[in-house]
Each structure stands twice: as C-alpha cells, then as structure tokens.
Image (cartoon, rainbow, N blue to C red):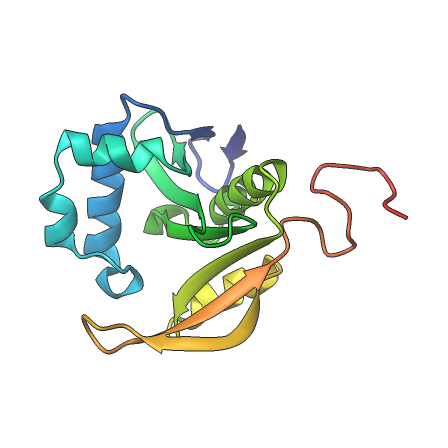
Length: 184
C-alpha cells in the first residue's frame, strides 16, 4: 500500500488481484474507463454495459486482473492474459487509472503488478497496444521499459491506429523484478 500525500487528506490505496466476487468493482471500473477515454480501448461502453455477472466472472477466470482501490472505490485496473498461440507472451490490457490520480505512481504500480505476474508465470515478453495519437500513454509505457515493435494495425471499429509495444517482464539489466541475484 502507498499513501498519496499530494492531497491534504492522506489517501491509502491498495493494489490487489481481483477475485470472484469483484464483478461489480470490475464493471464499475471498465464503465468509468470507457466513459473517460472511449478511444483507448478495444471494447465499447455499450459492450461492457451489456455484460452479465457471468461474463465478468469469465473475465476473472482467465489471466489476471489487478485493481487499485481506496476506501472509497476502485481507482485503477489492468489485466494480463497469456497469448493463445504463444503462452510465453502476456498481453497487458484494460489499463486505466482514474484521472484524479494520474501522474502519481498508481499506473506504475498496476503495470508492475502485471510484469511481476508475467515473470512469475514464465512469460518472456509482455505486449500491449496503444493508440498512436495517445502520446501520454505511449510516453508512460516507454518510461516503463516498453518499446515499439514496428507493428501496427488499424482498428476496425473506428479506424484508429494501434501501435504494438513490448518488453521483457524482467528489469532492463536482465535481473528478475524484485530479485537481487546475478544472472551470469
């Protein structure tokens, strides 16, 4: 847990793995994310609104989802899912942080959680897609070690260009995240 001291009232935010029973929190976060930045996601508000509790349970049964929350409510979300064709690749997706806490360490913590999960689950690469014109998100991912792969695609639903970025789930120096062992 970290304490956000930017505000006069200290806010404690916890980061945890989502579990069955978190369906309403997941739904709320996804709908808020899609209201805030609809172009940033592959899904739409109406698609997410139409999901049933069973749909949210299926979401939680594959891969991993992390939730950042304060006592008041969920404030951030990210998911990771192994690639169906190559399980050594994890896709980072559904990344969103409440606008009120952007610029804090919240987004870094969410990405770090997926990287740690990917590393501990044996992944060799973590990939994501980001909208080409979303410069803030691209810079954020670059600061977190992601690099463009040179691949892009045009999203069918709205014609926006999605750039692919990737990185190893280990630190740039080749050491496992959180490890102080030498890997010679």
